[in-house]
Every structure is written in structure tokens, then in C-alpha cells.
Image: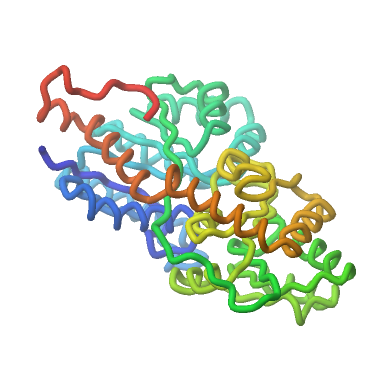
Length: 374
């Protein structure tokens, strides 16, 4: 089979902090293992190492992209897209890709893209629709986003695929204390619902529920640490700051329940990492989360912004270790079937080969995979 060169465009590179970067890192590792015919070339769309000046680096990186389009000549450009500035930066980069007639995949990430789109002026909404409609292919993370891309962005069905995020296998969680431990991983702020989470923890504490909580992630850490102290939670809730991949594994393996009370999401990688370790998940009814978590089977789904409902769900699992085990086991089985990095990488491999034409070059016409949803 012919080799396929893929230029993978990421904000700030795969070593940066964030779910898109972590997913890309997992994908590149797995692809190198299972699809040696596919060569992924990482391309930054901006450089966070410049600090507050990072946004101006897009202009500088354009020259690197042009160089690679001319001299490396990738077969595919795989561009990760999120709301706001990410979309408008990628529009400029996509125009370059079209000039070189290189097949372009737009991979829709980022929470609340539908809300971002609705907030735009009619002229800018038309620009976003054209951006997605001109792509060779669009990848989304679940049925919610498939419907959005089809109905709102006008992407044709034969150029639209649903490929869920994937994470690697992991050792199962083994809590070391009888006291239930709630784990949270994500940006510390209102979008991820940390304010609601602290209010729920306070309600549990007032009700005499014994628990500990470990919250990992950067953001408004000091603000929420102070808020936890005001609520009398300092001895219950620990803010860990940013945690690397090994640290995340350590925290999740010692946890009893994973909780993510976001107000807006796409398909959080952290939820999949919890499922891979056999943890039940308590999360909100936003984005692709209700498709990922089967309510009352692999976890509990609550309304976003509802601290009392969140507290009730956490109390239920804190007081029922048997139910935690059953839900965690079901979640792990669901991860293995649908959300392993191997499954995700295989589907991207198939898409890369098809769009690059490598399957047509190496197979007879009757063997070529048809277009449509992967």
C-alpha cells in the first residue's frame, strides 16, 4: 500500500494543555503503531510559548505551512477546529490549502460551537458555512454535532463522518480508602461548572456525606480554592493545578467516581479516560455527553447548572459502592467497544487512505470503500 502523508494542524502543538492536544497525541502514538503507512506531520497553527503574543504567531507559521505544502506535499491536511478565534484562524489556513488543491479534513472540536455560530452576524455565519462546505470532509464527535453540521452548516452527508474521540487502555481504578473520592479533570472555571460542583459538595457536606475530592486542571484555581474555603470544604476538596498524563492516571486510578458538571462541551476526553479505568461518571446533558454516557447504566446525567441535582447524583454513588462497581464495569465495556484509541485510529486511517486516493491506487475498483459515514 502507498504511504500517506498527513499534515495535522493543532493549536500550540500536541504538548500543549487541552483536550484537542491530548486526543491528537493519543492518535499520533496509535497511528504509528497500527498504520505505519501513514506519516503524520504535526503543524502548529499558533505558538503558546510566545505567551500573550501567541496569536500573532499564526502569521509567522503560515510561511512554514506554505513551505510544507510546496516541498513535503502532504496528501491530506487534517485541521482541528474550535469556536471563536480558532475558526477564523483556520479559515485563512484553509484558503492556502485550497490553493494547493490538497484534500482538507475539518475536525470539529470545542464546546458550544452551536452557540458560537448562533451568536455570529448573518455575514459571519455565511463565512463559517462556506468554510465547512468547501472542506473535502468534516469529522464530528457525535450525533448531536452531526445534526448540527448537516442542518446548520449545510455539510453534505457524503462528506460528513462521526468519529468519536478515543483514549488508550489503562489499569482499572483501585481506590485505596473506604471514603469515596470524587475526581474532576478540566479547566477550572464556570464553563466546566466548577462553581456548581463546589455548591454540590457543600450540600453533601451539610448532609453528613463523607467524601474527598481531587480537582485537576489549570484556570481560576486560586479563585475557586478561596470559594471552597468559604464553603467550609478546605479539608474535603483539593485543587491540584495542571496535571500531566502520568498524574491524571494516578488520580483517576485512586478515584471512586469521575464528575464533570460542564455547562458546554463537545465530547470530553477526560470522561473517556475515566471510563477506560472503570469509573462511573456523573456529567451534564450537554454536547455529545448524553451519547457517551448511558444514564443509569454507565453513570448519571444531570441538568447543567443544577447543584442540587448534581449533589443528589453524587450522594447516590457515594453511598452505594456496589452500584459504582456495576456502572464502572459497564462504562469500561462501552469504552472498549466505542471509544478506544485503537478504534478511533483505525477509522481515521481508513478516512486518510480513502481521501488521499491510496486505496484506489492499491485496490481494484470493487474493493474501494464507499463514501459516507464511517
